[in-house]
Image 1 (cartoon, rainbow, N blue to C red):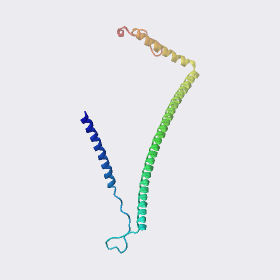
Image 2: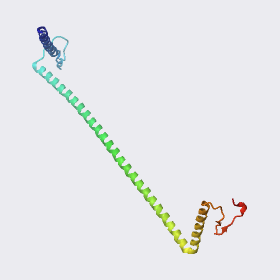
Image 3: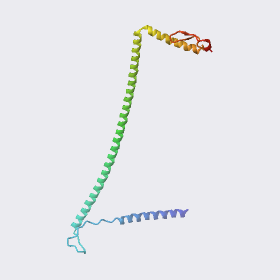
Length: 188
């Protein structure tokens, strides 16, 4: 039991040391960037000594260059955000346009349906008016023709009823209402 706890303690210490070594290695790897020092006009190789003022100017140029790069990255990021916002706005506008088209289509369908219904009602009203005119014209011509027409319709109904009851034409009637007597050879 003690051996397990000792091993555990040793492994924890080793883990801590490895973490510290990794942190130290990362710190060492951070290379400094070269300063933007300008070489003298008559430089032919060899050692060059820079004044503290020139070194400070070079550091300032490096900071300025870093700031410009950050500003450029920020501009790119803002441009990407604007493009994304425009894309979302365009999608929203397209969705709104589709919605408006659907509403307009529904309105057209309702209008067409109402027009069709109105046309149907108008047609029925015209037919009813025509029928009424015909009826009034028939009534004006005289009751005699109307009664004859009614009588002939009544006779047709009577003849159909007679045939349906099984009478074999013995009591049939002509179009003018006369009774028809068939000869016996035609009777069954």
